[in-house]
Length: 520
Ligand code: ADP
Image (cartoon, rainbow, N blue to C red; front, side, top):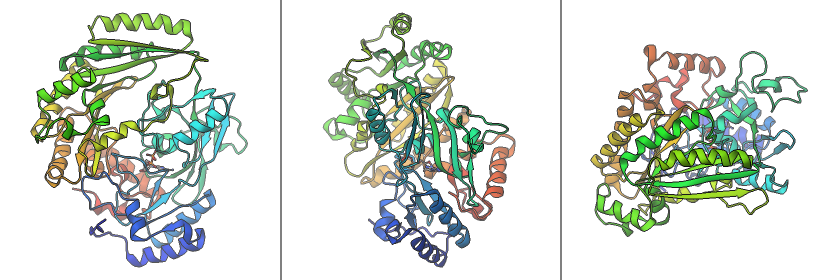
């Protein structure tokens, strides 16, 4: 792999000194600074291959070691980029915003504490969805996980980047209850009830007394999370639902307007995702099996894909969890609401406790096959996310769809998108499929994404999460009162981290020391 050339503002001598101190603290076997090591922490999906090259990585096993690393970083003014398992694919993987940062790889820290009665866990950052699933299975599966489409990652890391899953516990960040955090001055803090040194309610009551800090460590660069409390869903008595397909692009609006009130009133507790026709094809086939023509897929190819997989323009899965009698009553209401929309097909699904459980996202079983879509173009495939937050309105979603789909055609990209419900909002998740071996395409991707960000901003929409390359661009759209939120973030950042050692540039938050690194 080619070494990247972007100059880093971090002095080589400072890095060399920090490296020696890291080695004496952790042992050379837990310090990774060779060119091969650097490459292994690179973002394989990045649109630009320059810009995010880490200087190396360190892998502590304890909180005390993390404190030691933080002290060394401060002494040498070397920034750290914490990752849990670093599988944030489409958003930057394990790479830092600022070239020359040292990756703080927490994947060796894998302890799980389980409160079976209350259905909570206290996790270290290295626990993957597979680890937690295996653990819960070994305890009789009394609680279900909520997993994202990419379950390779860390449960903690995913919640810290506001990842989502398929069950009623799918908004992972809202299930956080209490954290342990190492601050940029190496102080260890416990949030919420954990601030009582002998609390039995750390994972039970989120807010503690006074300000509640948990969310300040989410998508920020204010601290290193070393433990996270999370609530788990008790195994339901029954699971019922239906998979639906809809024929026409314009079916999207009425579908959203039918689901939204059911979601808001709580009849539907899980957050459904409405996805387009490419989702199956991109996972099990490659583009060249359908066409050799450049540009966005033609209507003929779209029709062929839909026919082969027997899917609509849009598809959605709805699921109900809980007592069987309640689910049956709710199902009848869902069925009536959906039948009014005249779906192309409806496939019902039911499960009762004791029956064999299908391994899907809706049953909280870790999965990775959705990531297979990175192979759509073959070559060095990847995808990058564009995910603006919209109101829960059919007409707003239709307008967003039309505007965005036109841009895909204009830039010659294949449309892969979904509209994912929250309780009160929709997120238009676009997983833009790319091929890094196609330089001509890679030229188009960057202006395409920047255009999408600008189009969304023109409507007053902002992204909920973005790739390292676009953190400054997205942050800049949050512009009320002359970027007052930026000033607040910077005030907090500079107060907590005057040397700017923690993840400079994360979420567009730049410490004073690196202020000039912000993209114009
Ligand atoms: P996953 O492996 O679940 O995809 P990552 O480890 O890639 O998660 O984490 C996603 C992002 O969240 C990282 O890029 C980093 O910015 C932030 N992050 C992850 N773990 C921590 C942590 N323990 N403390 C602070 N920030 C973190």
